[in-house]
Length: 390
Image 1 (cartoon, rainbow, N blue to C red):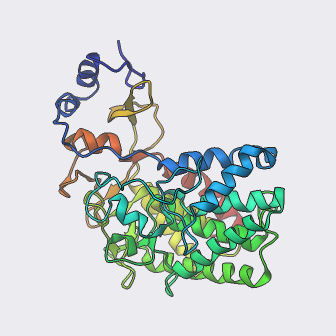
Image 2 (cartoon, rainbow, N blue to C red; image 1 turned 90 degrees about the horizontal axis):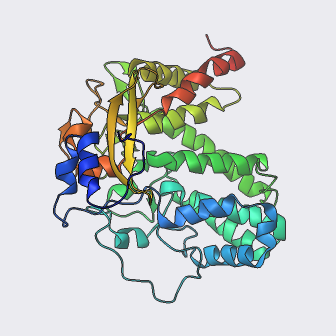
Image 3 (cartoon, rainbow, N blue to C red; image 1 turned 180 degrees about the vertical axis):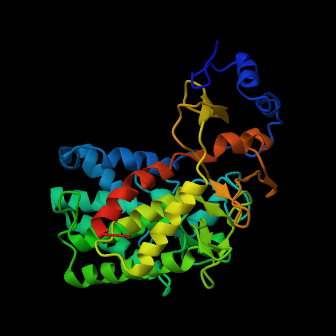
């Protein structure tokens, strides 16, 4: 008997295994080779960057560590940010490889991303964490200069209303939307708060001047205002947030074809956790937190487990929802704004009621369910006690 969580061998048995795990997977595995390629769960650069950040301090004084940081700086764009798909293990070459135009849909090709810098999937913020740590350990001026150039990028990219676009400079595509997707704004605001406070990562940010610290504080406060202005009100009640919001009206907005305007549990959970860190929340911030927690309670899913089928390389073949009375609560990624019912999408942008109705490529290549709200619900009683909320 094959368990859905088991890693299985590549070869003729894949079709058989997928048939057991998901009734719709078998047909999908046999789909034509021309189907859109699945994008990696983490961008190539981000995996290496996270491994670099996890190294002990003495790594940054080693030949490999010094070279790694220099490589990262070489990939920094002229506006101070980075994009997602580059190789931090080598210096930036004079001529980049040809952009892979099969990576995504409209406005999501590699060439679109290369024209700008981004805060998507941890980009720019992760590089800045690495640079700040490296300068603390090695005291290199080049690391400080590159970090401060990145900080200027974050200041420059912020809208006057407090939001950050996914990409900057702005272009006429979804990258200009105020972006919470994949923790984009939360990552930026968390970094700014660390800089303002002097650094919780071993005082990595003590080199940042007072003027820039004040700007970090001001940018963070504007970001909080933007978050509050973006919170969606449905049938007269505050609920949660969308992945993206219009940069002028704050209305929920779509991005890629399968990312429609919605209430989203993943991004909303991270936003609430960020707001809960406020030492003295305003009445409006408290209302935002209380409303979002009530929304998370209203739409949690019990008795289900979100499972995946992988091969030994780690590649995900499929994701399925299965019965499991002992599983912790789940949340869907997207909820309809009007009905509060979960929905799912394929690349055609059509709403569907079940993940089983989505093609194998998008089932395997996107996170449709998660346990995101559990941390919020666990911390909520402690937050109430700390701030004296009624």
